Image 1 (spheres, rainbow, N blue to C red):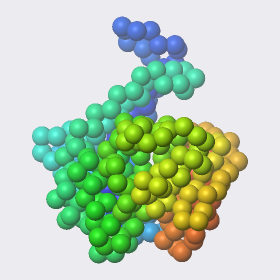
Image 2 (image 1 turned 90 degrees about the horizontal axis):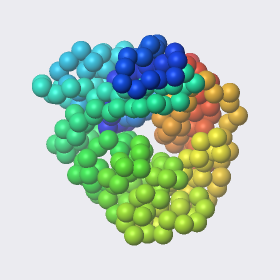
Image 3 (image 1 turned 180 degrees about the vertical axis):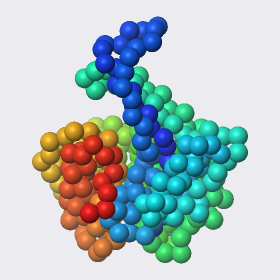
Length: 290
């Protein structure tokens, strides 16, 4: 399976007292490796699915760290482009003492350097292709076009209300779309489609736009699953969260791994929900292989 999109270095700094603007504030920090495509790939590798990563990093220490860590997890990195003069994608989160976000900063311009040529070179001979919203509109359009022409299953994770807008108006060629309510409404509104109604209505509208199947995620409320002849609610698995980072990536990877194993979509979504619940109960963003 190919996972295409973001590979990011995350830095979290939590203030030990309420932040004061305009001066230095004491805090504690932690660094980790992230990015939706990279996290999904690591989850899949931990679940025993052969996987390769398509992304772009700078010719710098964080980029090398991302590549080496992926290789240690069993992810093939032949299609991770190392670009001289670029800075590896980074996300910095400044957190209040209670864990709430004070300010976040994303420096991810290097991911815009992933081209249609990179995707064509990495396109696998068989199996699923997963794309995240960090890819540019031309790259996503090519992925859906090849999915249509080859009857190849292509999955997509929206990432954000801004990045979901990179999807084209015609979603045919997209076998599985994962997004939340706000992302669904953002995409539908951009293309002049109705944005009212409940979650089942939104999922149905996305299918009418061409998506083969939809996972409409709702956090602790679970998700709505829509596909041909199926419109169902899948409850979240009860959990005692420690850190919700990586939950959506775990949901997508668990669902994809189950689909690859032959499960139907509802059963696969339940497997994804189970992995998401186990992830939020861990301090790790990606669970290791069991």
